[in-house]
Image (cartoon, rainbow, N blue to C red):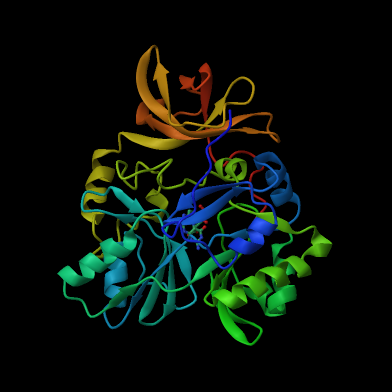
Amino acid sequence: MNAPGLAITRRLRSTPFSSRIEAAGVKTYTVYNHMLLPTQFRGVEEDYHHLRSAVQVWDVGCERQVELAGPDAARLAQMLTVRDLRKFEVGRCGYAPVVDDDGFLINDPVALRVADDRWWFSVSDSDVLLWAGGIARGMQLDVTVREPEVWPLAVQGPFAEDVVAAVFGESARAIRFFRFAPLEFKGHSMLVARSGWSAQGGFEIYVDDAELGGLLYDALIDAGQQYGIGPGCPNLIERIEAGLITYGTDATRSDTALEAGLLRYCSLDAPIDAIGIDALRRQRDAGVSRRICGFMIEGDRVPHQRNPWPASVGGEAVGEVTSAVWSPRLGTNVALGMLPIDHLAPGTQVVVSCTDGERVATVVDVPFPGSSQR
Ligand code: THG
């Protein structure tokens, strides 16, 4: 079947790297924060092996920054996320769930303290700009909320450090996990973080100049020739194996941060004034009734489309599989989904109604074995 194409209009914003990745042969896009996000280059399986063995440059310009700047920036940042930000010094970033008053997930950004009175929330696919701006307005906070012209460019894979050091200098090697530092490219300072949406290790460069962005892309590709560098993007197989959830697919506005498996990033015992933290405390105390988990799905490769698929036990619907793909490394289908708490023990079996029929799936721990080379 011939898949329909995507009409690229003004609402579907390009990035400073779009011309490069189109020249490099991007095969498919998805839409993320009203922008283009590549999903495959040579193919999901080829891209997967390449990401794990070499190094890739990713156009993740769609990871938009919601900037909070001014005297009340820190206060607004802490209202927006249930993660305790009190120990976030300048140069630190971290996964920081944003929830509504009832604890339901609005976004799962990376928060960066860019300066004493300036924060960036590097958001997944939902309109945090409106939520943050509305809170600032409603509470009459002394803060500016805007979306700056910043387009992250990720370098991911086992040789990422060598490539970034070749372009930005040896000091890049000293940046620790989830820290960032200003480094120079052609005399222009950019924030470079050791982070990224894979378990292979790497960096994210917060590019704030469109013209330099294209040149930086070219410089990274040049410097990476000896390591087999190529274009890439967040990889479906790799991120399921790593247990990285994607907002809008594995977790939505209908799931709380705890149901989304983000308890580790919710500072429920900290004395902070975050929106929704009381609801999450109550949910933790009462016991969460369902949660995201990993699966192995039996049989040959699952069809690559149209999740979620219902999951049932004894003919009764219990949950769903939200992302699934064949893992060529593990020789089985790997998946993420949502099940009631009493079905979450590893080894529990459910029946999944895939697009092409019913299959048996087994609950497993995530990350999958051997997923992380970080
Ligand atoms: N990088 C940046 N912005 C982003 C993403 C990113 N915005 C959108 C989306 N991705 C946000 N979601 C995630 C999810 C997981 C992680 C990062 C962003 C992640 N988690 C680590 C893990 O689970 O092992 C640990 C995080 C921590 O220790 O704080 O990397 O990828 N800029």
